[in-house]
Length: 397
Image: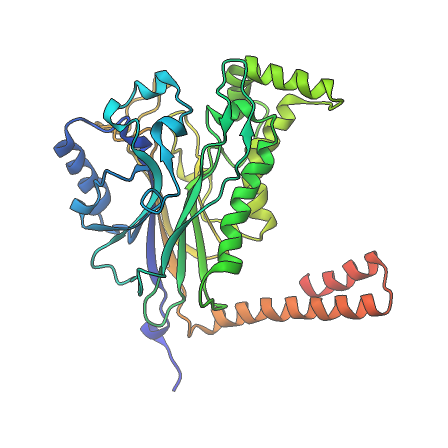
């Protein structure tokens, strides 16, 4: 019997990104903060099914009282460092938060709404964490700390509901920001690129019981906007805070002495945009762009969501949890909770019986299979590289 109507209707999965800034800006009046979260997160038409937290604390949970369950925490899994270590012991930064929190583990976490129709089938195997950063050594000098790159992680959860593809929601916060930006000359563009590659490699190669229908959603703080314009905010940031840094100057001198020619701003541009290059290289795409607004307190959209295949986005909106630090703009919120705004996105997940979804997936599989066959034949008969590319291009359009 043919399926139709509501049987083929897509199902919404609502995902929210929430950077808590290790509670440095969180109100001391926790009752007022709870009421603000309740008003902006829960008492809405589409409360999130999944909340991806960056810069949370393993010891502090403010979402369970809103009806959310903490299902994975990188700190509890041992893939995290203290606030002190993550800010490289920077005294002015540590002074912005309660001294009692300095040695608490700062980490990525994922919360799931109790009562959501999207479920975790097995909490022993359908959620977890992994380290995404390398053990690189950062060379100090020029007022910078010396030591290992701060640990970065990815937390993930597999969400399922009957008759729909499994959705892997992954939460990360990649290297970057005002501390690590000072080291960008030290191959950190490659580091940022690899952290995204590792997240995607988990989805592509390491998830358990994979199905071709599975959907991946990578949520995170990239510490950068998707574009770098000569007169834009990232260029202004480079000229104001990076170019004149004693540490950056020292790294540039060292590079030149080793015969490496540098164009500092172009290299900084590559560093900032490297995670977006990784998303594109892996064939993933972003769920929204700058049209939704800004998420940092400095006027930038730096919190992003990307998917392994294009999905219908029913809605994507900024939830205002902070105010802008510059420009004299009127406040966006009466009570600041963090230094980030949140983004809530409604992903319309197709039914597995939807023939258009299946046809698209099968078409992709067929195209890839055809390319492999063409490649094998061309290699067997000695086709040129150009001929091989032309033949594959015929199948991929």
